[in-house]
Length: 594
Image (cartoon, rainbow, N blue to C red; front, side, top):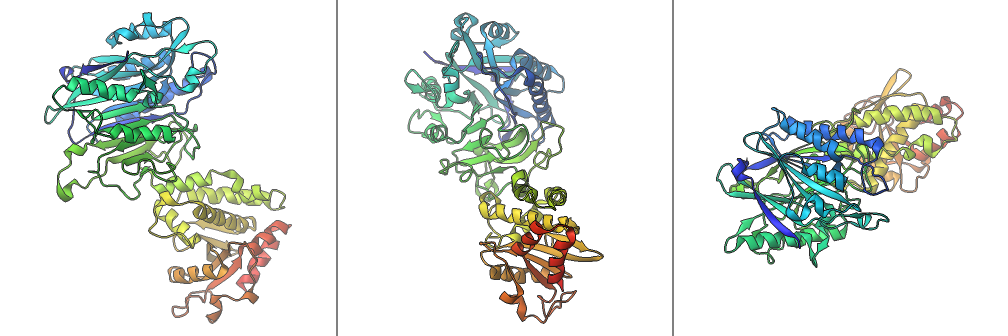
């Protein structure tokens, strides 16, 4: 029988500010053994301990600008056994770690012996149903530990074994996962008003799993509801540390809306509950992930404004969550699903003033921090604009490079070298320059459209920029990528010109697109256009530029197309694929320029 036990942290002097709390969500990449108990691979343990320390260092850094990091959350299995517990113990015992703070984290599989050693540590509590005596020799324990550093600097631990096994934990050949008997509800108080503030944690599958014929979260709410008697109690934060390969699965997301339904367990007020989903990473470095990741902060409260396109996090929905299951919620979903640490300030909806002054977003000061020494624009220790995250993810795909598409081309090696330099140049662009580059290249992208909605058309536009410039680079032309008035400035011998690559349904559409932006450029502009069918273009087909008086070196203010020359991408690609030397490609370019 599952029991719900309230722990009074207010008597320990634990108080949280009314306006909001500082949080750090670690998102490490972890690898498991296939044997029971399910633990981190021995060869990866050292890296996991380093990642753990890095996350704790981010907590000390207070990048969210709160007075302290009130909650540090480590996902399921992110703490490598008793060694990881020791790392956290030592950090919290330090004088630099502030009091009245909480660390919540999942410890990887513990044998009954290791579990007993954990509970023997000073100031460590487990309920009567979760004692070492209840764990047999054929069982292991997957648990979440809650550390609290009280107002006097004393560190306390509460151990909550997982209640409902996931399939990977259930479908075992030799041992079984011990199923816990208790859910802890921690009651602190508001520093400003003294009003109680409560939080609880459920470990991954406990969010959707069942015990005694009910969802585990229902058992939690029922316990609080029963304790309320004739009063109404709040649940202010609900933490779900995860190791979840499909965090937006319908079964997982459907329980979010069910959890917030106030009709059941009516004495537990949840309209303003902050639901924190903290998952492990889908890869060992930043980048696009097909599984895991998608850590998020979710509110049902409509008091917060839904932002357009914030740095670091998006509003969920497509393409991040299929079917947009949290459409009625405020879903701050972190774009980075690779290895990193998220730091953020989470606002309290109950503290928002009425009127215009109360127009706030739920998550502020969100920053992304690295878990390696590798420099990456997606983990700068600061906020990450959507444009920067998106374009770096797109550039990570190596198979789209021209040298990979046509490895047999004689100039493939030169194209590869050029691609590497162009790739680096685009990665170093500022967010507004990335957006401008895409808008210049993609005729069908709307300027007001959120980057989070960019899809296939914008991906192809980036490919077009990369491959067009790679051909010019393979031909020996020097270049500087800037995405200001054009995509790049290129040099042929001692003559410079600007270059723009345009992707459109028809070459004529590309012409109009360039004409609209022609006043923005200075000097000669080389346009490389590609239509939907990737057809050749020749001067005999004509162009809207034909109405102009003829090509010149500089823009005529009354004749904006006078310094524009155009090459069809297929023309350029054909020359590249058959060229035996750079001069063969330059001949096609020179023909257009002259």
